[in-house]
Length: 197
Image (cartoon, rainbow, N blue to C red):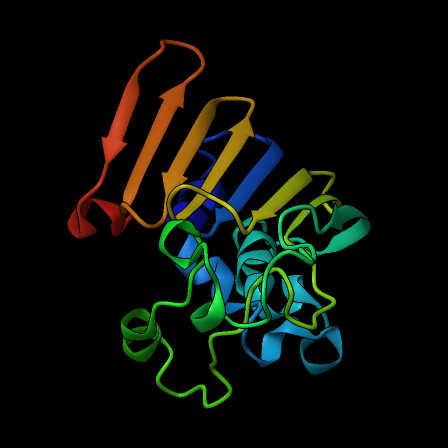
């Protein structure tokens, strides 16, 4: 639906696109326990987690990245010598946001056999916990993408600013909103039928 709206000209000329993904504590913590915690296994967290988001940006715009600038790092999931290597041995387990939750992992990551109760802070790893990209597309659109592994809730959102309207999408809630620049009209589009443009 977003791609159709962009291609239809409803937004006018697209100038910027902003997309983001935030992971909640249990989902985020899983990346520091599984095989994805090493860049050598996945090409880095953006490749492992966000390649689909970045493909969507290019597909929606019908354009390819021409220049990319990126910054990121690890500020939350850093070693803590006061904690043990495993959640099962940890004195703060009951109050730790990232404590190993066996039922959650069984339900969501059945295919991963490398799961363990590794401490997300002290596990051996080399991936980032946040990253921001600025991308100049071949059609001149300036796109931004941001990933955070310490969100209060799971989110996946996109905003597209054009010369005629602004589009806001929330992929997890299934909502789409278009605000017209000329008359201020706002169209809320949210059911599967309405999204089938």
